[in-house]
Each structure stands twice: as C-alpha cells, then as structure tokens.
Length: 310
Ligand SMILES: C[S@@+](CC[C@H](N)C(=O)[O-])C[C@H]1O[C@@H](n2cnc3c(N)ncnc32)[C@H](O)[C@@H]1O
Image (cartoon, rainbow, N blue to C red):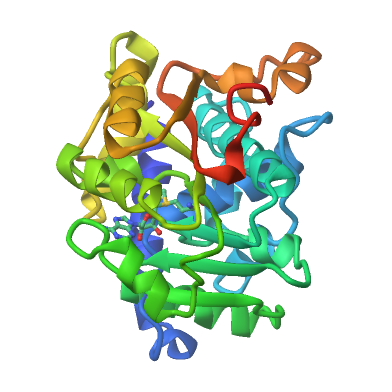
C-alpha cells in the first residue's frame, strides 16, 4: 500500500507539474480524475490479457501528449489490487456506455463529465453530433490534448459546471435540437456532485423534449474492506487534486432519483452485469469490486422496449 501511495503521489506531482512545461503554458492541467480514468483504459490494453473489457486506443494518444507516467504506474504494478480495480471500473463503465450509445437510435450523444473521453474519436459517425460537457478548464485541457495528438475533433464542447449550471439550456446554446432525442453518458461524474445536483441533472436529462436515454455510474456506500481501500487510495488521490467525492448512492437510491426525475424505464446494474460474458471467461482474476453501480434509464420514444429489455 505504501508503494502505491508513492505512485499516486507521483501522479499528484505529475498533474501539478505539467503546468510548468513550456508546451502546456497555454492549457490548464487535466483534472486528476480524468487522467486516472484515461490511463486505466489505456493501460488495460497493455497490462491485462484478452478478451479486453473495452478497447480504447485513443486514450494513450491523449495522455502521450504529456508523457506516459500515469500509464507507467499500471505497467510497473500490473497486479496491484487497487490499480487493477481502477482498470476494471473504468473499462466496465466505458463498455456499457459504448454498448448503450451504439445501439440507441438517438443521433445526439451527450458525454457528461467528459474528461478525456474518447467515444467521439473512436466512433465518428456521420449524422451524429457528440456534445462533451465538462468544467471550462477541463475542456481547454482536452482540446489542447486533442490538437497535440493531431486527432480529428468531431466534438461540440459545452463548458458547464454541473453542480450549478442547468444542462438543457447549455445544450440548446451549443446547437442541440430539443425536438430530437439524446443519448447521455455520465461516467465517473455523479460522485463529484452532491445528491441535489445529481437530482437536478437527472431532471434536466429526463425533461428533454425529444426524449432521452441515460447511462451513468455512481459510487456505492463503502461497505466492505475493498471499497474502503478504494476510497482511501483513489478517493484521497482525487480529493488532493481538488476533486472531492460528494455523493454515494445505493442502486435503489439512484433508481428512485431517476424515477423522481421523470425517467419511466430504469434498470440498475452491477459492473459484472454490464459485461458478463467477458468477465465470465477471464482467467486473470480481473473482477469488478463493490465500489460502483450503474444505471440505465430512458424516457420517451427513444428507449421504448430497450432499457428494460436490452
Ligand atoms: C473521473 S473523470 C471521468 C472522465 C470520463 N467521463 C471518463 O470516464 O474517463 C470526472 C470528470 O468529471 C468532471 N467534473 C467534475 N465535476 C464536474 C462539474 N461540477 N461539472 C462538470 N464536470 C465535472 C471532471 O472535470 C472530470 O473530467
């Protein structure tokens, strides 16, 4: 545990020191939480064995623009239980979100708390608009990384602080069509919002006039030793970077918030239910913990017959 703390401290130093690099002078540092999530997705392909829970070959390119240290921790400590747990969390939720978005008929994709999300770069689809929503500084950092990595940028950036800004007006201002449906992902976001802000955000999505489908994860109460260690390691690392976790919700609490917000179809999933086949076939001990839950919810014509039946 001590050595891992050392690694996470290095990550903390890395995050704060990149602002001193000449090429980074015009861009703010990435949010530490976004670096950790992207590094976990990238490292999964380097550290773990197939079948992969999720394939994201773009994350490393975004991180490479600043150096590979965050991925290097996974390479140095491939069997570390905490880093392995971070990889499982990040890849299971990304896989579920990809599956939902790619099978949803909506042509407006909204990525909330986007960080270094790569969906738009991995799945450019003509006729589909991808809106990435994050804090303004996080968006400037992402845009700078996209430019340095020389990636196409088929993204509409929507700067917003979702702890106080309303989502729907921000999306409309960015060009989203209220009459057309949305498919919305919120990965690694809700824990950075308090419960009231999560409820407001859900209401904004459920109230979209054209209908909406949502996939989100949420932090569960830390009821066992593994979850407490995850909180001590990951929660402390992001809190030290100014990103404190503000909410923990059980699956039934999250489902109730979704229904109160106006979603008519709600299903909660444990991570192992998101990618059951890929997890069942594993021989390498890569297993989800008890840290997060997922919710998949829909309202309106978009999700009729899909949310409960997929
Ligand atoms: C753990 S990262 C997840 C990034 C990405 N969704 C992923 O899974 O790789 C959390 C992201 O949420 C963003 N975030 C946190 N609080 C936010 C807020 N109040 N408004 C908008 N974005 C926020 C952070 O800036 C960060 O990019």
